[in-house]
Image 1 (cartoon, rainbow, N blue to C red):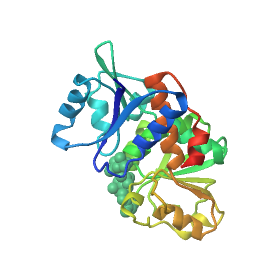
Image 2: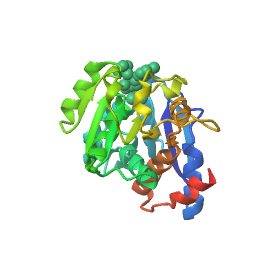
Image 3: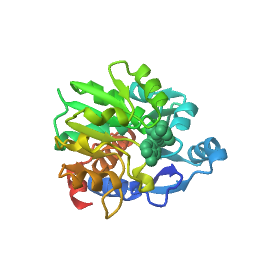
Image 4: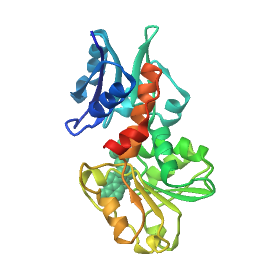
Length: 263
Ligand code: ATR
């Protein structure tokens, strides 16, 4: 019987995780099943428990339950604790273990395109996605990391948990310049543009969107390209975070460059 894996989320039909994990499995000579499971919000904890009691070996969790996955887990890695959110679950010695591979996934993909060390970074958004990547970003020694959010209060709360950052509203960005802008808002998922000042783009920062859209640029990538900026969507991060989860479950690190190329 092949080992059973899955990704849970809501919505989930668009997820590329089954394809990515099957490509990894093929590449590394493993046989496994990897399905998509639609989360029924009030039953999330029960769905996770049923998956493992029915022999499931590993689960990826995506929006909107990464924080809940963290809450229901019993053992957490340090990067999972730092993010207060989990995207990778597995059972070990009778405990539900949780990790968060989003931050390392982002870093690995960013490193393909740009050097973060000593750069001025602007992080847009202060929700779960932003929280999940702040620790690994700070560990890469940027010169400065600013969190800008539509709702100032949420940026302030996040800043308190990561004191090496500073925070502001989108309006405050009018006369600021950055080397790298990372979009961690959920606006791209809804196809919405952010209300950012044009001046921000005058020095043509490198732009990265955590979101990814099949066969078309995200709203943020399209917007950045209008200002002749280099702009990349989150497909590479998706593949890298999946590779790290694959490594946790199987002890083998797949060759991600080949998969990025093929997708
Ligand atoms: P996620 O887990 O994807 O981060 P979240 O925790 O709901 O989801 O956070 C969504 C983030 O996207 C927030 O920072 C939100 O800004 P607010 O705190 O002001 O709500 C941001 N966001 C979503 N849609 C946005 C939009 N149209 N313009 C600006 N920010 C937006």
